[in-house]
Amino acid sequence: MSEQAGGAAPTASNWNLPNALTVVRIVMVPFFVVALIAGGVYGADSLGARWAALALFVAAMITDWADGYLARSRQLITSFGKIADPIADKLLTGAAFITLSWLGELWWWVTAVILVREWGITVMRLFVIKYGVMAASKGGKVKTVLQTVALVVMLVPLGLWGTAWLIPGWALMAAVTAITVWTGLVYVRDARELRKNWLAQQNKD
Image (cartoon, rainbow, N blue to C red; front, side, top):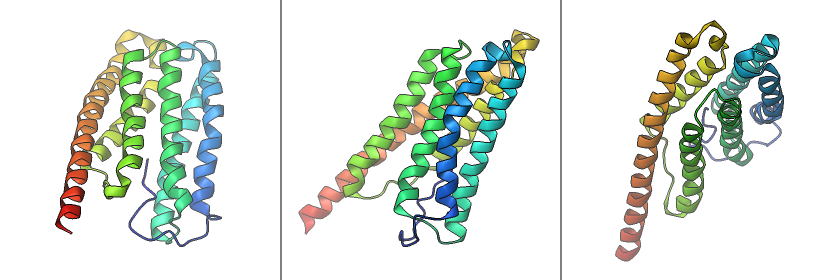
């Protein structure tokens, strides 16, 4: 879930490799969902489909890292990339959380908390952008890494070997939920501070 935003001005053409990888990631989402559903609970219906879903998820995450790296290193940062990259990330992870909950492998309340936070912060960023840019926090980056690792572990069909094998995934999800809530509150605080500083500057002018 890399950032294409960076600090450079979006002067590159939208027709470039990083943006193509972002689009590929979006296209992969429905195929991932179909494979995950076809596999059934913990891959009981089709172990091959479950492994295919995991492979698609990992491949999509690799494109996420690659598009951000290429955009920054080759000065290919664009307005399209700034918008599409985070949307692609949230579509992929959102699809994973929702489908895992639909299969009964993850509590719905965990999915609800995480998705409300993810989309809520995204919407909030759009509302406060006139006051300034909210930089990604270190906690937010840790959350992103933990979230990715937790989803990968949850997608491995460990449940077929017994309930005890599910404990690592549950533990990771507990950590993800906690840090998701905490970083969400931090972003709300930062947004309020950003608005407060902007208003103070306006009054000073």
